[in-house]
Length: 369
Image 1 (cartoon, rainbow, N blue to C red):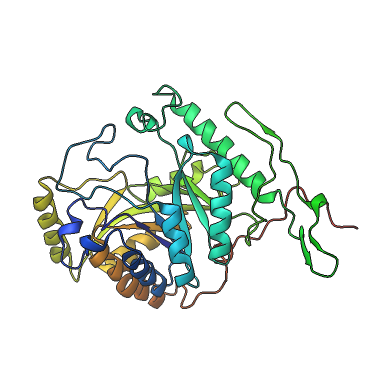
Image 2: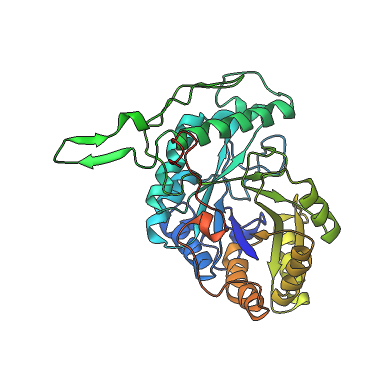
């Protein structure tokens, strides 16, 4: 079983910042994020995702709000991951990027750089945005646009990013001081991508990443078959099985998203969630299923959904200060006792942790027979 966690501020619950140990005063510091990711790595998790967006968080899914009782503001996800990378050794780092308003050339070299800084542990979580108030930050085109067009643009975005990662062959750098040759120009390739959304010549200015192709992830339906890993939001085992069946060919992993509120017993977990709801002046809701209970009960649920075909899970801690340690120090040991989760890291790269081979560059000449 593979496990990841979604990191978003102080946690998924809007009142999480008011919990003991939440450290809201440190939320925009490197120390906070270093400590959180260190906890995830201590639990041997496959990777963490860093949430991001192009507008302030909002209690409304379609418009900004004026609330001042919830966390507002984020650090840049890619830059945060790059800052944390040298402080970690094994865990994958997967920042969110909104393809709708960012250029694939910039994203390609940013994630390639993250892969170098992390020594092969970078990934990318591709998002789209059809919100007019986000589009107004850029002023390039009118919104809204059809969802299908956003997904098509995101798929083109990823295709450009992937081609740019391949535009340097693995042995393009010679670095021969004696001859004075640093690079073999014949092993840098123009990608010459032409599509309805992008026209990119290439090559990249960053050599091919250590993983060759860093991990590309997205929510189900965003990229079609362009993602290595997709996140789905089933409510039960039957929906999990259906989500796996719908996954596009070429998708290596299907992870179930699940918000979690954990405690020593069911009533304590429910009481904590109810107290948070009271602070937020409303019940917690999420696009994914929400689990409230004990670590052993969560392990039961994960195994049930794993049997339905999911290869892993991305857990969303309700309160990072409370629920992330519950995952790493209680859920993980329970899964280890059951023989379904690793006891040590077994690979140096994120692709390796997920059992994915390092692909060859599409532009490299095939090996001689």
